[in-house]
Amino acid sequence: MIPADAVREIFGRDTAFARAVVVELALRFRDLVRALKNQKLRTGTERLANWILQTDARTGRTGHVMLPYEKRLLASLLGMTPENLSRSFNSLTSHGVKTEARAIVIKEREKLQRFAQEDPLIEELSSATRRKR
Image (cartoon, rainbow, N blue to C red; front, side):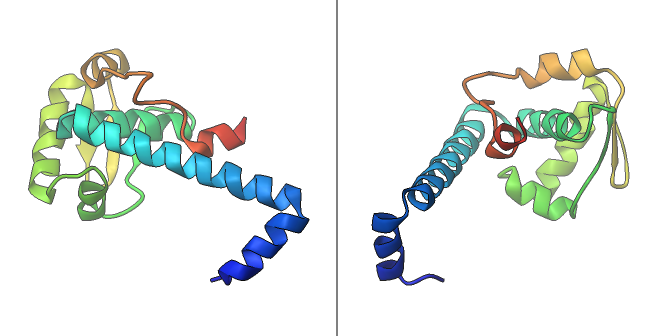
């Protein structure tokens, strides 16, 4: 934690620091808005489908995704209960997804993409993706 007075003082002296802080805050705000739109405009199963596609894209688009954490945490991040997450994984089998323990395999990408209904108004680039460019 940095005392607010120290931050205000350096803002006045170091414009590069001030600009970097403002950019980071703006990126985090956009991520928050994107997450909120995702929560409000999609069903839990659609959120899971989009999470799978986005995670696969970040890891090289191999069609194989490993859960980076427990399913309970993923459920929480997607705004659903663990039971609903389990049902959503089962629902996605008919949309080209196969799961085995922590491994997720995209067997029919186009089918999954149609179901996920990717939307540029929701999916605007995350800050992590923007920084890699």
